[in-house]
Every structure is written in structure tokens, then in C-alpha cells.
Length: 336
Image (cartoon, rainbow, N blue to C red; front, side, top):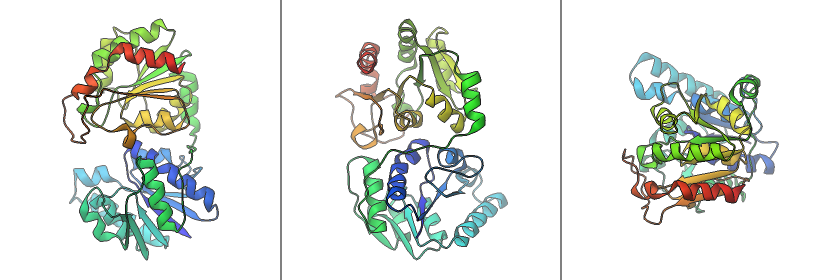
């Protein structure tokens, strides 16, 4: 059986889909499990040689290019190349774990006789591309993905812990350049939109207290000019330091992290997957549905006044802003 999973991005979403694939691999180790993913997140699935602990092969969907120049010759070539690569594998089943119009179209491009998705996908038009639809089961998105993949494959699947690829250069970089002292705490101050950002001045004050507790405090950033990370470093009066890395580097860094504090953002979910002791700060998004999932010790803080909303607004959620530095420090002490 050849199964193709479509979950293009982003970082946290790919991590939330992986436990379902890991469960299928455990149940059917002789099956082929491939994946369509944005190039930015491929390091979560395979190394630079194309080897991965769960997935056999990845197909790259260059969605950033497609969005920035939808009618360009480069975009058309990219889409045609993806379609050709997918068709060449002759998949028996495609499972869309994303549920958008784009992922539905990609599912159709594969040419498989069976294309499965949720009956209530995130974008309703995606359902037009499925040959079979299943009702969403489970509370957490990790549970929902495992239920859908299991039903598509004709079995019951429960999500299991995942293994992530190791990239030699990234492991060397983290060991020799990024990690300067232990214990180390990484602060994940970013997020998909502003409402999920705990205020930078609070992260800065937290960094000062963590340093007093003996931690080397690091703020991860995807690029040197990351505004959010720079604001946290400034608010910490230089106590925290910024570490810039891509996804492979972040995985290697997180393997050496003793504590993580962050909001509903990809690095938080990476910390959970790698069993890093974790304090997660939630506001507009519901942690029972989107919270950290993994084997490590976790504390999730959310003010009762926060109202669940997935609207991409820039202003910080008032409830999230109410979470005090003292309550985060107390959660850290409980973990340790």
C-alpha cells in the first residue's frame, strides 16, 4: 500500500500530523508513507539525503513561490513538476490532513483512486476533491489526524511519539556554536499572528529571573532582523541572547534545551515533540485543541478571560497579556 499525506505546513501543523504517520508506520511497517510539504518544513521529515525515521519520501510544494507569483512561469513549472512527481509514484491513497483548497488540489494532482479528507475541512471547497469524507473525531488536532488517517486506511490508529531526522551539520553547529552554557532556556516569543504574542517586556523580565535561577537564556529567531526576538533581547537588558537558525538548526538546538517557554507557536510544539520541559502560554487559541502534544513535562497557562478565536489580528490577546511573569516563574519551578 502506498499512502500520501498532504500537510504542507506550517511547523507546528506538520508536527501535529506526524504522530498519526508514526502510528501508521508502527501498524503497517511494510507500507510506503510519503508526504507533501513546503520546503521550509521538510527538515522535520527527512534529512538532506532524503532519509527520515517515519516518511519514505517528501514531495516539495513551493507554496511561498506560488503565493508570491501565482501566474509566473516559475510557479507553473513548479506545479507541473510536483504533479509529475506525484503521478509517477502511483499512490493507492491520498489523505489530506490540511483541509484547504490548495491541499485539496494537491490531493487531486496525485491521481490516486482514493482521496480522503474531513467532512468539514478548514476551507469547504477542499471537500470537492475528496472521493471519501470522514467526520472529525477527537478533541486535539493530533487525535483528529490519527483518527482520519486510521479511517482512511481501514484501521484504528492512536497517535504515538515521533522521531525527527538528525542533520549532521546542524548537530555540530548546536553543540559547538549555539549552546554556550547549561542549563539553557529557550524563549519562543513569536507566533503566527500578534494576538498569540505574550508581551516582549514580560519575556524580558522573565529572562532576568531565569538568569538569576542559573539559566543561559536564548531567544530563537528565524532570521537576523526578526523584530519580535530583538524586542525581547532589548527588554531583557541584554540578559537574553538571540540565536538565529533554520528548522534543522532549531531541532538540533532544542535537543540540547533544558527548558522552553513560549506561546502557541511552532518551536513550542517542537519542544513538546522532543520532550523538553515546557511552559506554554496560550491566549486566543484553545490548548485543548492546539496545545503542546508530546511525552515531556508540560505546564499550560491560560487566563480564564481569554476567548477562543483564530482570527489573525495584530493586537495581543487581553487574556494572554494578563499572564504574569510571576505565574510563569512558578510554573517553571513546578516543572523543575
